[in-house]
Amino acid sequence: MSIEIIHSSLSELPRLEESIIHISVDRSVLAKRRWRATAEDGREFGFDLDEILSSGDTVFRDGAKCYVVTQNPEAIIEIRLEEGSEAAATLGWKMGNLHFPIQIANHHIRVAEDPAIRQVLDREGISYTLAEAVFRPLNASVHGHHH
Image (cartoon, rainbow, N blue to C red):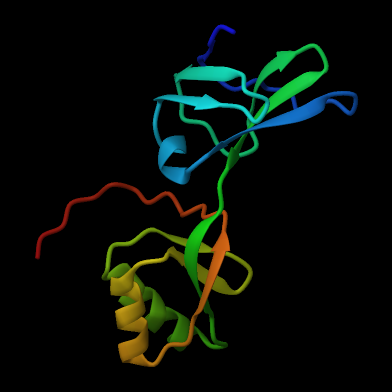
């Protein structure tokens, strides 16, 4: 079987009559423009992208098969946001000071599981939950720091 080369996602969503075939990848792979992957049915894909893909993007169709990129879940730390803007602002400042990417989801802040973050949370007495989920961090603008 030959490898399918993908340059961009397809604009259409899967149709009802199509079988969805997942191409499962890690978040770090989705951040790249050039990579390879194998779909769950064994079909091989090479990605040479104009723009990076997102989980859920349709990338290829073959008859009644629709190939969709799916981000793998990963270990995360989930921190429930307390009521009140002061507590949320303090937590945001402490997490931002570590320069780790975050996701804000349904009254929670999610960060990739990391011992440094757990250490800060434990030291500060901030409760958290270890979980596994698809992690979609906020896109931060690139800026310089002068410390």
